[in-house]
Amino acid sequence: HVMATAWSPAWKAGSWVSIRRGDRKQAQAIRANMTAAHLERVDALPYGEVVLPAENALVALEAEVAYQREQDPNWRMPQSHVMATAWSPAWKAGSWVSIRRGDRKQAQAIRANMTAAHLERVDALPYGE
Image (tube, rainbow, N blue to C red):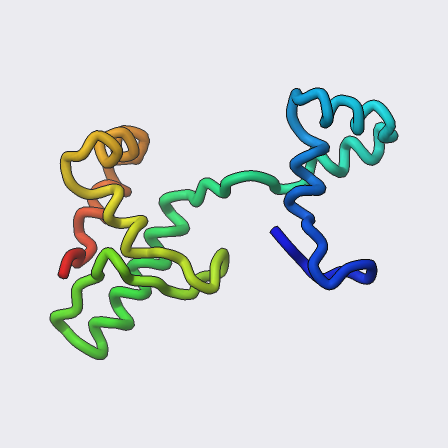
């Protein structure tokens, strides 16, 4: 993640956090010079891949389907569908649905960790070209 700060218009915040987390020698050396309060603050930062709860995704997807179906009652979500959400200005919604549908190993592994109610809602989404 890159962000504008008072000291840099393109500060690499993600890299800064990355080199202060984990078991690598570099991280351990840097952490050894940090105060306990600083370590606690660094460790509390939301870092890494965000695992989006299925409920959040499904609520957003169902709202998008309702909106799109107002425009076109036959609308189906293509795999390429991108939409703005609270967590991303360009969330790959169609991909999220795609990797949870079908009988591919990846889909089956993801589905195995979803509740029956969530699976029912994913399967009810109008998906496909």
